[in-house]
Image (cartoon, rainbow, N blue to C red; front, top):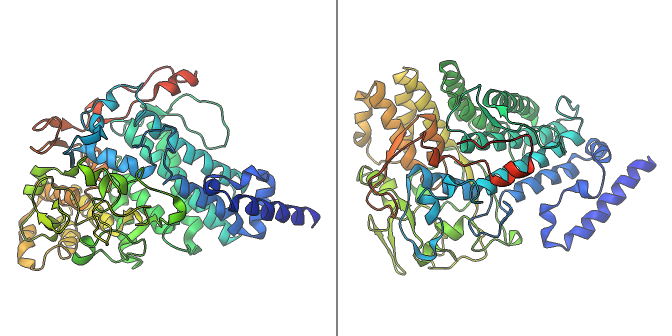
Length: 504
């Protein structure tokens, strides 16, 4: 009992100390108490340990979290943006201030000595992994099965976050899934010394083990809000993992998981008004997981909004434009509500379909004040239920289940068109034409959300840049072009003696 009282006194003191410090959200409770004591604390009050998770979630949105002073370094959403540019679905249209221009020109990814994104992604996702490892270790380790549902919820989230980080690393640093290829070091315990690369198969085995464990652990877990992960979010990541492997049996597993999430009834697809309504609220019924930004996060220019929202204090507002690929835009049906998301904003209105085709009627601060929002308080979206509809459709079509694919696809299109006659053409599609249509709909649905790159690698696509790209307009870029994959950073090659060569 004395030890328990001592633990609580330390926790209370630490909370008092950090409450006056703006940076406390990026600190871990383990700075104040040992892993052993933290594990005992979890048994008494799991909400204390859940503060560790909030620290990880806050790391995901922190400016310069990738270890640089570059304004393109702002956590997970920075890589969503970069991957959209690499897929060519998002076009770098303006060059003012040169932000992201070398990335879009495929310069940054070609040289392992350039920090962005090679070093920033490596450092960021491995930092997330180490933080998750600390939580898991403090609660009994990788094989422990807690008795408390609340503690299971904490560990389930930590395992999902670890799997999430390894999945994105595998997408960014490997061209495609090949089980025998050495790809990344695998760390599942905190503080391990630098390791050699594990194979893609070993990385995926750990991801799948983590996600299945997390799904089981979170069966009875009720999250406080959608800034935390729950069972359906873990299922969503597992569906993406299976879909990325390019194997028929895994495609079926991915489809089944996506369908389970849909039929759970937890989420409602964003309707026509919502997809043109700003993407500002975590509470949006169609959002599965995201982040509730507040003034306390202190985000300004170095943020996703700082590069994408014309109505925020942003580069998008002053000519460093990023907009939808023009060829992609031109193929959107005139009656599709998503056509109205892109165009030319002005201080008094919006010209739909006009250059620079920025998504200023998809993502925008509702005050509609040019250069307005600061600090950033509009929320971040990480996963939507519409992803599961289109992933289910894609996997069904790939596996020859055209009826199921068409059903899911039309459920999406019913929320993008007013008249069913506009998407009746879907009924006549089959085979590769049906797959291609689902791919197209996925590309235009998720502009600016970081899904196009995952799709490009999953379906082994070659995308041709439209005329509005500042760099390489008209060029066709294949998924296996090494310049579309991040390079193992020079700092890792220097500091880790067990990695002796890069990945290109």
